Image (cartoon, rainbow, N blue to C red):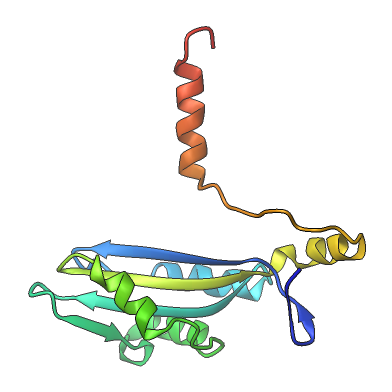
Length: 150
């Protein structure tokens, strides 16, 4: 099981979200900060990008965000490293529609570290790992309930 130098790491997730119509708000920044403060996640990297109505791409730096939104994102950003490469950003923005914004987010799940350490202490071998989005589970529940004889 993976370790970084000197410590066990929790599973790492990436999220890609878009804000259609460039309706970007800072509503997620306080929650990211709260999750970090409570030791649930560690934000490893995040990148904001924006495409204007002509398709011109603009990287949005947290320093350029104003007010409480900017302050919240700067607080999260000060503890991040640059994990996303220019190729990652380019691949994401290729499919980003005009007049929309996007966020690439990389987080470590700190909540899982103690369980992972227990697994390591038990000499287990990780066979496979994955994540099933809750939307997929919800769709399966609906289809099972709708099935004849359910």
